[in-house]
Image 1: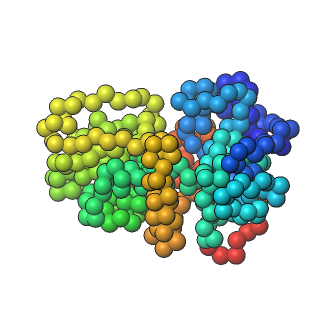
Image 2 (image 1 turned 180 degrees about the vertical axis):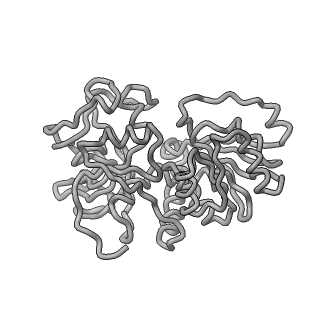
Length: 334
């Protein structure tokens, strides 16, 4: 089968797609999924180079987010609610391939009103953003939220979710194009964080109060604390800029603020009972139309997976970047 196989650590641009990779075999508790679309993430770039915190033994197939159908030849483990042909989305190591073995508990039914492209970008970004805002920051209706890297995969999900939860959203991004995308996703205001003194714009927008919640996947907590409100909460989501920040804790003291982290991937092991709760609430939001996945207009065939990852690395994209693994019949209407 076709697959993006990492045999030697290298930048994705140096790794060709393999045409004759062996098909996976389902282990205990796993089903086989025919992959139609896969979601690209910044950490895929790191994992290909051996720089990510989770490194499977080589050789391995890159990729984690996917959408597809349970394969016709898949075993169905005891307790598994899925059957051959079911449309699903989820996560498993090896998503950049025509077929992947997935723990059935890491799969979610793909809503009827969603395409495979939309579903392929759900599993990592949306629960991360939801739990960050609801579980960690305890966001309340009417509060001000600042979302940095607001046009990226997790950022644009956070913009939509914050609006759906009744917040007032300020998007922060590095170009007017990305601010326009953020506004289209629901942000009330936009600021360009490449311009010096952008925090003053945030303070002006909020009437001098500052923002109640900072959602930061890029590594701008330190700069954003200049415009946080009294008793504000700053959520550490990630460090896409590549540098782990060091914070002056006197600001935490003087402004009576909280710095909280979100590591959604750890919930399966540490707080598994929270996972189905988050997914139920998210699927309710999708079903009501209050939130909708935003996919970057240019999709990439599997053979050009590296091009999509390079575009993410160079910050040329917005929304969720998708790889087409195989074509699906068009949906009648979304």
